[in-house]
Length: 232
Image (tube, rainbow, N blue to C red; front, top):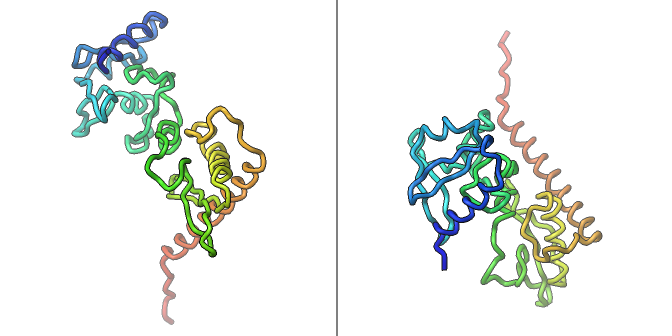
């Protein structure tokens, strides 16, 4: 069975055969691995020493110590591509082809942050429901209800309580579709969003955003200092 390093080396080698050598550069890292970057970023990337680091079992990335911070190669490339964005804005960068040593801009998804998290997160385990985004609750008479919620940039957004667990998961998928442009990990992958569920999810999302906007406006008003008039 191939190790993570061996799999990565083989994937990079195979990919290189299909790429135009005039458009790419190969950057050496530890563990005798090479990463692929766009030719235009070759000299900036080579200014740093890159290490192949394995974390969380079998996840491997190229990283370097830059300005006192440990920065992954994919984040560094995205920073070069979008210099007006900070590293904190680029915390989540995913790979279109799933090859973590292919750090060409075309392979690094431009949707960063919550979208990337949703795309790559695994199904939930050891919870009250078999579905992601669904939590078991009890109704007033003690019968089971299924509360649906989804994580957004500002926290958890509730999208309703339903009597049927399967339907609650269906509404979750609809909300994920609307919020993350189809990039989420669904409860029912490959199935188009249910139209009724889309209507419900759209209504919940609109209400959540309206409430967040009102709260933001209230906070802004509270922060405005009161003017003190001149005494006469």
